[in-house]
Length: 72
Image 1: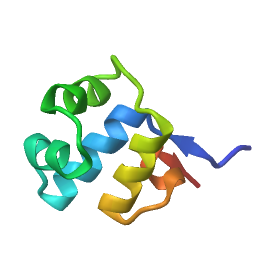
Image 2 (image 1 turned 60 degrees about the vertical axis):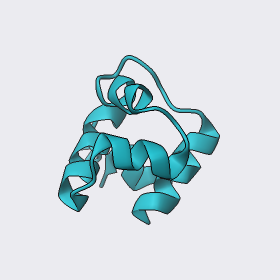
Image 3 (image 1 turned 120 degrees about the horizontal axis):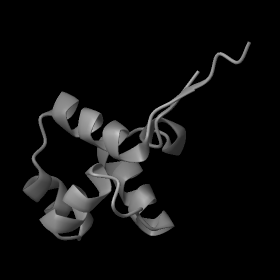
């Protein structure tokens, strides 16, 4: 049985942002994108570029796996 549980990226980002008490505007400013882009990511309508994923990972100080919602 595979014990890996994956969460969609948007849900993972939303959960992480809420856990840390960070608003969409604050996060957007910190990584250099618009609030609308954060919303699109969280709603699964867009996927971030690799450079944006790295910026998010550094901002939240989590691995790319954690950011991507990969749970083991």
